[in-house]
Length: 474
Image (cartoon, rainbow, N blue to C red):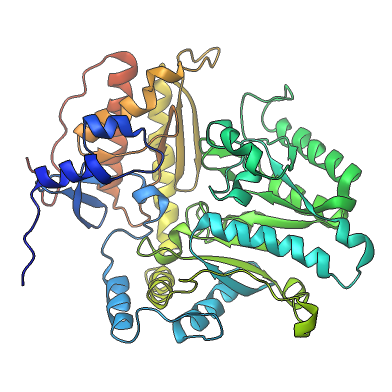
């Protein structure tokens, strides 16, 4: 029996009645149903009526090479003919083994062990629990068992599960849930021009390292690990750290015998111009969380990488109960692992990172035009990650009132001209697929510029020419 295809009206009605979207005020959806995407190809999304939209944020930062990448399509199709899922609880399968081997080969030196989970938040949870349990089972024993706390940075975001929320620092997302979480030490972060220490960039990095050093000096005996987003605090508004800050954090952790957890969920897999952000400063963490771009935007998969030293602290006799008692039903799903392996092969075969450098430079040049706009307060770029912060007054950096939702209005305006963006408050985020072509990148920047100009300055945003192949229909 062939199932009848639902009409757009039926789907919209069902969405109003049953769908609950993440990070979305659902009153708006009840009044105006979301755009329904039927297909995607390359850097474009296509709705039910065939209209096309440039995917300016890689479908929430996950689509690396573009939608429907043939090499990844074929890898998933090949694997589904063998097995869609088998558990990793006591078993293994080739894609999980080969992917672990590949990740260990590509990761910063010394990260040799790979533990799979489902998404960025769970990868962070794994890292936190591993760090905690490592000290409880460390060969030095005794005093190390008191190392049970964590240091996180202000403005941090590490996910939405409770451990990740505990080390998060964005009040809008996290304040409500504080009674459910554990308390972490908070170090100042050099990621914001509104420096709480009154410093200016890049002196803020030195000051904030001092903030971390003070915490570690006083409390290292009770601190298990420091957790950091390397180079960019993404959800805080694509806020970039000064050069050398990550290396400084690594050095302080070494000095005070504290583990370093690096959250590469948003920055990993080429987003910063290197496969991992840690590579920019030659840093090897003790634990590293990856997710988002791991499968190229195909299937949920995350991994926590760690060192042989930490791994071996979990070995022992059954009676010692040193096992890492953590796992998920779909941990290391074969389809997802096959997609991830194909994703990494594409990086190598197409020399993605080499070709990306020219695009990064081109993007940097085009972003200079935004400085002409009166309400652009800051432009932050790290590789192919961009945050354009909108302010009411550029001289004083006075923000717009939250209720005006300037960022959302800019993104809606861009949407009308064929570009999908999703803001972080009043920060316009640009994070296109790495495979975007130069003329598509030009179109993305042109639409974003005109949308900001229209919303903040009232200058009309004229229709732009259709893209070269296919055009926007409807």
